[in-house]
Length: 141
Image (cartoon, rainbow, N blue to C red):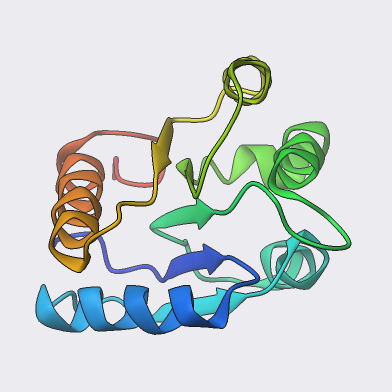
């Protein structure tokens, strides 16, 4: 991968944290992986970091601040919006209404967590490869 910023995982399920860490290890992803349990935990980091995060993978249903609320907050704050961090939902399930809400908030993808480790790894790799090749404000020098 050519994008060196951290991969941010926002998910309240610690089992999923383990799976994502294992996937990035198996894929030899060199990026640091940072885990947060909800939107309230990740916002202080996003507001203060000098790093350019590579991507945010976010669960939909979490306590305190869910994924849609987090995305709304990022979109409503000029400083956070200007960071242009790709934001992808990676969640266990969603209704059509939730998917529409997500795209109304200009997310860059919406994926359902796969039942098998192999499928999760394949989907994760597909997303990372896409964003590694895609030009966006954080990658143009």
